[in-house]
Structures are given as C-alpha cells and as structure tokens.
Amino acid sequence: GKDVPQDDREATRLFGLAADQGVPDAMFNLTVHCALGKGVPQDDAKAARPYRLAAEQSHADAQTNLGTHCAMGKGVPQDDAEAARYYRLAAEQGLAKAQYNYGTVCEHGECGLPQDLDEAARYYRLAA
Image 1 (cartoon, rainbow, N blue to C red):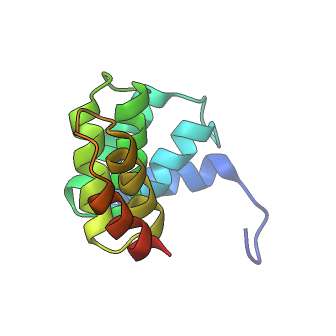
Image 2 (image 1 turned 60 degrees about the vertical axis):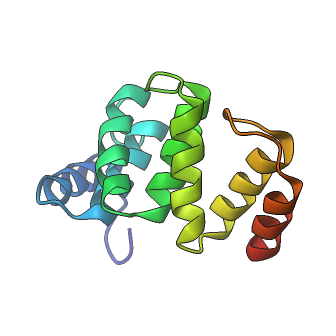
C-alpha cells in the first residue's frame, strides 16, 4: 500500500464491498485478487463472477480477461464464441491487448471464427 502497510486480505475485503455496490473497477480488482490468490485462496470460479459483472458494464480489461478465461475454460465452461465476443468488445473500446488478442483469433481462425487475414491486420494495426 501507499503510506500504509500492504494488506492483501484487507484490500480484497474492501474491493468486495465496493464491488457489491456495483463499481466496475472494484469488481475487476476483486477478480484479480481471486484469480491470483491475493488475500484469499486462489479460485478461478470465484474470480469469474466479478469479471462477468464488470465485463457486462463495459470494463475493457475485465472483458479481455474474461475472454481468456472463456477460451481456456478457467473458472467458467470453455466457450470459444464467448471468448471471441469478449475480446472483440474490449478491442472495440480501444484496449491494445484486446485488439492484439482479437487479431490473433482472426489470423488463426480460432474461437470458432473463420480465418480472416484482413480483419487480423486491421486489429493488429489498431493495437500497434
């Protein structure tokens, strides 16, 4: 912490309180803590719920991370179509890592999408 001792458990508790109030950044931070086991036992399934809530509120980082969880079946059922959808939603908000991820999906024809090199190039250019 800044000007206070770092306490992951207390930070996770406070993120949880703010997440319960519907704050997307708090939902995202709570999820990161759950996914990494910071202040709580590591739990991908528990992490997925606040990721989804933040993603539904157009939090681009949450959309990108939820896309990765969907692609890998990490804490949620594996779902390529959902992965591609969340990557694209975040990419359309201008998040470079999501633009790169979506470009990769298009380049290789992953996540149930047909290969589309023109679309891949467009998203790679946006990410650059």
